[in-house]
Length: 423
Image 1 (tube, helix red, strand yellow):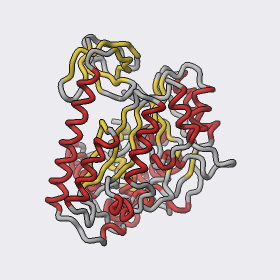
Image 2: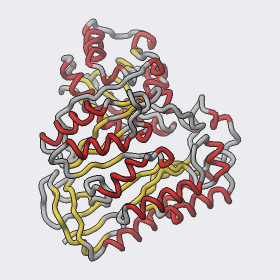
Image 3: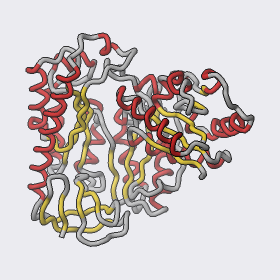
Image 4: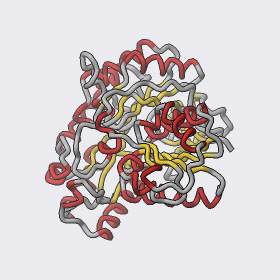
């Protein structure tokens, strides 16, 4: 076995896992499993620990190396696990030198060391720059993810991620365009721009270009790019050029996933969000006028501290008021060290029940969207030989095998409540 990377969490981690695999193999690591963790919830950390124990049982001879956001924020937790041989920081994990050092560390026969000796984690807040990591593609994926931004300057009261990712920093536009051109030359038809706080792109670069400027430069200078997609965005940071690109260039996909978090203004203030309910609704209305075929997704937290039933009802109503189709629902999970963890908590069973109701609302919204697509024709990017996604990111079950990565036009003849069915 060479190097296996087990990935938890966001699309940014997916991209970085490919960089990790390349750098770890280049350093000569063998018989190793890298666990790239997520810290967004306590449950995510628990799942990573559970996976580490399982991996060691299944591959007792393998070295277990742990990195990612949870490794950055809780290095001692993972270093104390007997199954773990090395804990590597979130900035270090994308640097080839860190994997060469890890290989040297393991080659010295570093067995039975105390937990402190296992830790290779630096101060993430001291990191001021990020660079493009040139890769040729992502194994087994029909679309490519490209990191153009990392870190976050905001301090939402529930969020631990800035302490795992550091402050906001962006990849220069020229490097980003070059990386995307390379991926397109290697056959990728769709590219997804990713970041921790994607719409803060450019604030640390000379001239402070915005995300919309980057998007327009990509669309202008990368011939052969069929689809450009954005990962999660913060609507309050969406700039004029980004909206103009959505309105004027069909290659920018009509699907926006919004970091909404809640539908009640008082809870949004307690979360230290920078928008109010009316701002979210107005943004969705504005984009829908510019791009009528747009579909929205959204992140919503249920059971945030002090949330009453009436406050929660405003989150339920937000699904209809914003016209959301795809929901990512999280029952609130207190993260030690965050202000929200010190606020009066909603009972765990209440938070879970509210999350269940939100997910049910999301299922109803998705079903309505799927039903509205029946009888239409859609262009689909095949992800496997039997399934793909429309431009609006709606899943489709294909009626005939298609090579992954190929874009085809299909007729929608039905749906099963989860995906469209193509003829």
